[in-house]
Image 1 (tube, rainbow, N blue to C red):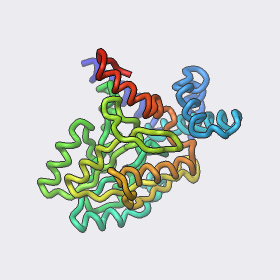
Image 2: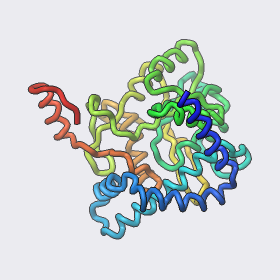
Image 3: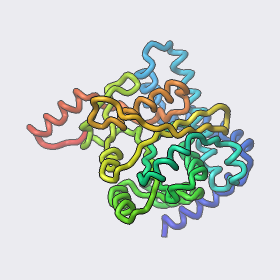
Image 4: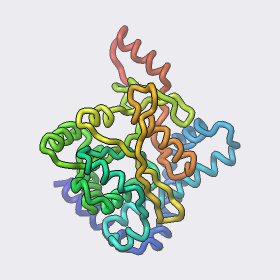
Length: 308
């Protein structure tokens, strides 16, 4: 009952905001920036530490300037995501350019599922606009991690399904994808794969943004089972409220156990270095090193289990 009431409150509040023109919402985003940056200081230490880690040669002023740019963009991203509840297809077409979707059509025509790999870079919620430029496959899905709040989760599901997209919970991805393959259903699946794996499955490591980084491999392991083809969705933000989204085929990296995932990470890295302020720096991406992880695993073998 509580979640149902909260859901209707969220829909009323966000829906009311979403009916405002984006120009007005961007003005409102200045207040959101002030609240996050100056009042709540939302994950400010995490953001600054991540930026210092990746750009150690930058001056303090340069690092802090990127921190501010990130929070300005994050505040604008929030209102852009809210706007999805009531944005028209005509306006979305003006704001999102899609390129390279013929690659998806080609793979689908050849009978392969298509796995789209992307990160929390640019407006990943507007990335579903790409689906409108793809006729085949007809089924487009995205894997998502449910929120702790059922009410907020339902709001996001409503938002994410506006443009002909099916949302699949992360824990149900394996079964759902295998079933579509067994049923002979042509499909496309989008994975957000720039998060840090949870501490129990940090088996695979590589260099990402110059840092020793654990990475997620589930999408490639699943792709092998269904004979998928992999593409990267590259996002550029030429101006406020406008995005250029390009589907790029992933060529397998040589001598790697997960060659397509490594190839994706290299392309993701290039995108971030090109326009760093639009990556989600508030992720706790490097909270443990490979050596620290190995020491922790060794401790688990010799003492009482604990978490990191």
